[in-house]
Image (tube, rainbow, N blue to C red; front, side, top):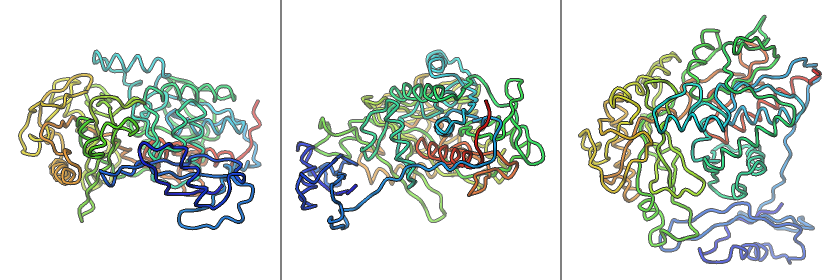
Length: 527
């Protein structure tokens, strides 16, 4: 396929025009085109008075040999994913622990290769999970095993459903196509910043489940792994719900919040280490004000998507404050997974039509803040979450307006921005939840970001916290080539909980990568 990049059209120009513009650059007649499609579309808002769409268009031609390549014209040849099957006979099906993006894609690709995986998921299927979450968000009744963090689809199911990633991996294309095939909007195949939205994603994960079952896999919901079984340096299975399940391969796709399982694995000798993560709060603005800051006079144009941003500031010491998981037209949601803790997260529907925008405003923390013991890194998060519960006297979230936070004054002067946190907020002092370095950097970051984006530091913007689940606080060690844990042959740490991903896309890619390694380890011979 030939790619023509940098085709620019005005907001009101017909999108079909980009195909003719691409052919003129190639200097070839339409009669040579076998197939054409938009590969990517993004908004160019660098000039607020001249906002445009930028396209990359792909063509399959009868003869591509005569095309002259340049900076804006390239050639790509998509290569199918390779699964080279090993010769060792495998008498037991692989067990995948966790059914978030990593576990889901690992199980899907294993099922496609005929391995009929068994998936163990501590939480509920989406249908029951939605009811458990409703009870928490409306009545404060928390299910520790099934909530925003645990259950079918993982934490990403109740988020904005972003499919952006910084990794450059050919498996990303396969992930996007799988999502589209399972019911996600087709626009994710060409949008520069694809997202699905929580309402659509809930339906999509059910389609993944049904496909895995159709291919011979099995999924057990409400089934938490209790411990690993291994002997003589080799995995022999797992114990779950009082049953010992034999397995020659076990995939640990746990998610970033499986703290009890991390503690169990550490007690069993699974090698792990602390890793940097980030903590802070959710910052809310009016979506209309974000649009004005990004689009100027074109804010509200029907063809422009709700504005979104990503801002970051880092000092010479290596500490960063940045926005993360921005949810245009979204909601701050209760995301606790343990009793008497408060955790916030962000969520958007596919339409992104909520009144507010929110994003995590977080500060990086590392061994300087919690030491080298993985259990201490977990305890660092838990202390913040319990402190928030104690501050409000329940599952309401501490909230502070930005003006007061910058001045170091507890409380909130509510104005244009109304809080969206389902269980309600209580004005408080967010700085009291964290070590002093965190609010210090949050203040510096807000002031810096306010100079980069008009209105970011508006006094009536809201900070609701804490945000503590940006990524896993630990990394389960594994070989870089085989992806196997040093503890036992056949044990595969995977995805965000393992410390090898940072979002839906990268977790799904890691799941595929682990599936390829399992296929390479042997062929299934079980009935």
